[in-house]
Image (tube, rainbow, N blue to C red):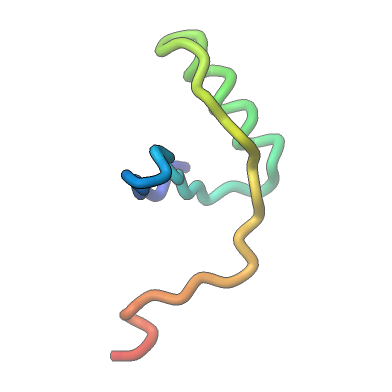
Amino acid sequence: YWIGSRYAREEGKLYCEFDAKDIESIIDVLTKAAKVAGELPTEGIYKIELKVDSEDFR
């Protein structure tokens, strides 16, 4: 499922975070979304190895 997105205005890029069992699951979601919303520009899909949030330090 989709967790959230962050927009880097200076780069003109939108970074989306998904919780999925594998890359193929994300590709399936993007393929289904493209049928409804049109092709979504994607440079790549990368596995997040480490995520640090402010909650980790409270």
